[in-house]
Image (cartoon, rainbow, N blue to C red; front, top):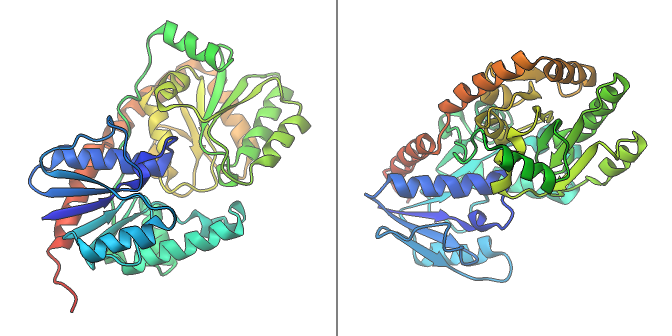
Length: 373
């Protein structure tokens, strides 16, 4: 059969979670499956190193100025229809095959509407409902996301399958001391620091993390905090909060950190922290564990599924518990080592190969569905 995939999000210059999901899953599918044909749709030409154009794979670049998905990709679906269409990181085009599969990554905008601008909430609501109702089948990143899809009435349980993402295997403990020192020098960091990775936006609960960091100073533990991530939305108050708490000398906003720098940045940290109010999956938790770095994360949404018993879980609204968890890990080297070892074991449950195998089975099942009259 011919499998069409919207690969437009995989070519982003500064990829974050959903773009990485798209890139690594597509690569894993192409590596796994030589029996079907693939047609990948792009708005912009992909960099030569991103995809290998194998005999069973066509890279179809379709430049278009605006509304690429709903106009240009719709036109493609109307004139050169694949047997099944897969959209891993965006929205189904208005014109699409009845046999379409889409991944829904999270419904955080419903749990925390205040964390999104009004226009973004509206688009997320429309696009997610459109995806869930019109796709033949829906892939969810986690049981938490599936539960939300069902409870909010977007889809019935039988229409949603949970397929856990993998992680980039370049994330591994960095043992080269020169490389670690080089990263610290590049980002102006001391030997001891806490790290957070994620787009700057309210759902990440960075205000709570800054409050916890300020409390550490009051308790005579002035460990530096490195926050890696590009500016998202509603982030301006974070910089004012740093000034208000007088943390300018110990809180480092690194901006977007290239993928190749993250393993050393995370390995070099004493602790990785993700105190989010909501995560559809929480890929940075896996990446930190893969680097052998002990993790503190929230005990809500999908994060307990990802972390298992290999992290310290805290309620995102309880700053004091976050402070206690940070102090405990910063003071206890043996505990940090044990959690790091547990994390390396936990990440072995997740891989892009497993994700691709399960995704391919869903695509094959959907392709066998009877056509709608």
